[in-house]
Length: 336
Image (cartoon, rainbow, N blue to C red; front, side, top):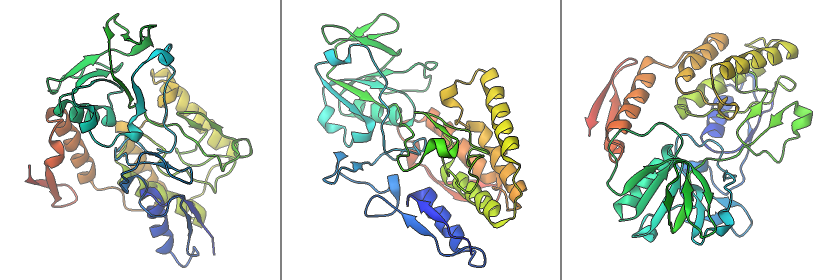
């Protein structure tokens, strides 16, 4: 009987435990390690912010792009020590009301940055939504002004943007994601390089070639999380149980290098090598073929894309729309 240790009882860890328990002929009941006193991970809301009495970070971010949320990433900004207002990360954001009538620079326009900006504008905050992407073209509340990236905080505490504009702000809100951090792992022993935004090399975005009985489930970014976890877990257990024959260590390392170089040649930044986005569907299909499990039904991709389309059209209220899966290929709107 194979014994499986599951680190973390969030959505990915619970998916692992479920599949391990479904195969008692191969696996012993799993041992699940969880730092907090409950299961559910980031899906368990906690009112507190910052750190608990025992030093654990308290979290409540419920954004689909944030898989590893224990160590907030705050980029270096020259002169930030000059800022006279409050500096915080979206990790510690709870309610918009305390920011009413304040001027807030929100750094980052992904899921958390956009959602928080909309909430802040709804209570009368003046929001500077700072990001380096193409200008957002969907409708935003009148209280949100799009700005380029922040370059520095000047000697007077003003926030300076890349286009030369300046803002006097009360709050800097970093919606800049999280760093990968695994203090319980010996990266050198595993043959891994663990950086703020990248863990490499990982064969199939999951396993170190030097240690193929270790799997990082859900490390990829911009994915449809629960179906993605489900596919990764089924492949991982097939590999452990002998249902998949893995290549040699050198072959896996070569494959990772080739794949990463291809993406770098396409203009993908190194810090974004774990971003899948539209690549996720072919990836999940490939896992299903290799491990001989049922692939994701087309309706998953269709509904995911519909949700993102609605998010661009109606960023303030797209979550009010409820859908029902009618078949493997069709969904219907039941409320919206």
